[in-house]
Image 1 (cartoon, helix red, strand yellow):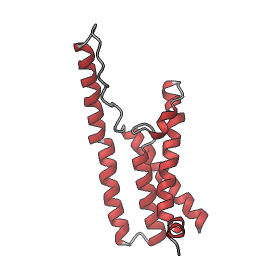
Image 2: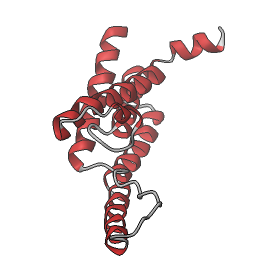
Image 3: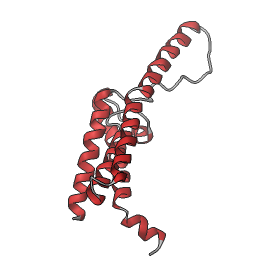
Length: 151
């Protein structure tokens, strides 16, 4: 069996990629609903609704359980990694984004009336709890939907 065939036969990998792609694609219309602007760059952006980090890891974790058993040690490791990433997405990365927002505001205040050519810090690098929940739900839906198709 070739490497390509092995990759195409890896249902967990397909669930992970599908979860990420759908989450990234959904960021475009959800951003439109929020801002009333079509922002196609959201497809490759970090942050936004739903959390692609949460979606891809939950899809992968549930797929490991569905295809290899929820009593498999790999499922336990997948749950642990998912918990770390979800916590990071909603916690540390969100706080970093809030700090960037405040620092950008300080720069704007310091340079009022002056030309400033520095790039602003990226403010949307984390997720709100609702965005993370959206990613978690999407991950479940993707994994279970894929499992039902492949059964």
